[in-house]
Length: 147
Image (cartoon, rainbow, N blue to C red; front, side, top):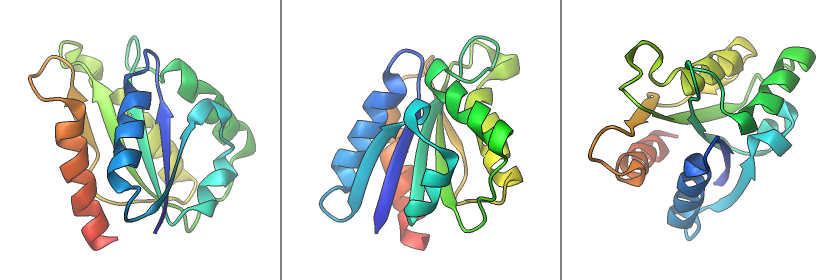
């Protein structure tokens, strides 16, 4: 399966997780990794599955590298019908009121343009004990079983 992995990051954690996911999948799938900042929304149509790793920043906002992608989504309002994606968030539950909002807002924007979400959006809690990959890899394996 052709799987494109995109990340939206502020500090580099989402990029590291995206690369870990690609490493895990590369033997069984054709994978690529890209920064959302350098991605056109129409590019999501090229993969059979798009995996997005997106952190939240400040008051539940998009991280710096996701903002150019979001601006393109809003300006171009592309038809993303047929695009399938799964999204994994990174956040900190100490910011309870806006925990995981970056990935939630991005998922909502994609769905509003016709894309289909696969699986449940999970948010890794930086205040917790788990490593992001300990949640993301089993989560994605479950999605791939049904994809």
